[in-house]
Image 1 (spheres, rainbow, N blue to C red):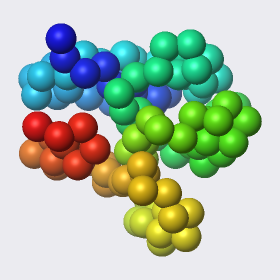
Image 2 (image 1 turned 90 degrees about the vertical axis):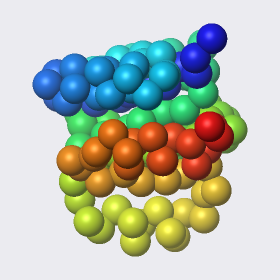
Image 3 (image 1 turned 60 degrees about the horizontal axis):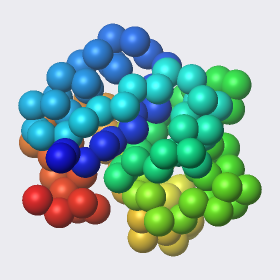
Image 4 (image 1 turned 180 degrees about the vertical axis):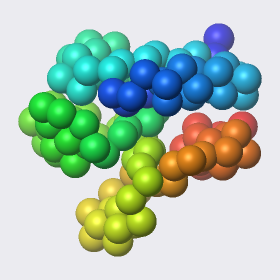
Length: 122
């Protein structure tokens, strides 16, 4: 049974593209365009990994991460921040969270696979 990976992204074309890529490299995508719904689902049925967009509403990816790790106490799920912003790397270094990584948009299938395997293995 393939690992379930939650993709939290409010841009439908990106969700569709990432679904194809995740399936192609052997994972089961859980597509969640609503960030608050993603928090609920992560608590009820935790995925193996979360791919998280930063720029979303009504809360952004940083606020999602804060709620996930703090309020919900879910520290063991690895999170790959999925963003086009180059300043994100600097911010995640300061968080000192070994279960946190980054993927720059646009992402290739090779980069996606390597990022996921960093946390889940091959």
